[in-house]
Length: 142
Image (tube, rainbow, N blue to C red; front, top):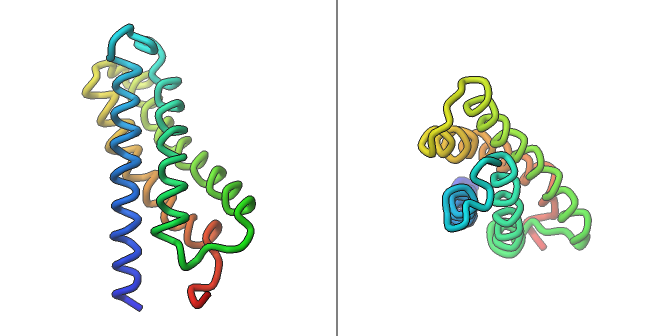
């Protein structure tokens, strides 16, 4: 049981790392990349980057991390996955909003620490627990 959980956590971490690179890279590209697409819109940039990273995470978690816990209801899982990720998004964007607008920290470093370190850590813990308890609820003995 313990080795299975450790393996699951390792897969979850690997999928999360890939999604994190997508999220971080796209967030910074939108905020600070060529054309300054969303330079003055940090929250919008974060929502877009999280949405794309969520699609990456959905595929990885459904077909690798929690493959043995999938149910036959892909639509229910996807809906649950999206709801859980909206909760994780609220956590990450909340950290960014607090840092940017309440504390008045407007540097690239401050935005990245609040959104991509603190928000990510809190959101990741929330997501793992919610995925196991609410989304991927099929029997591991399929």
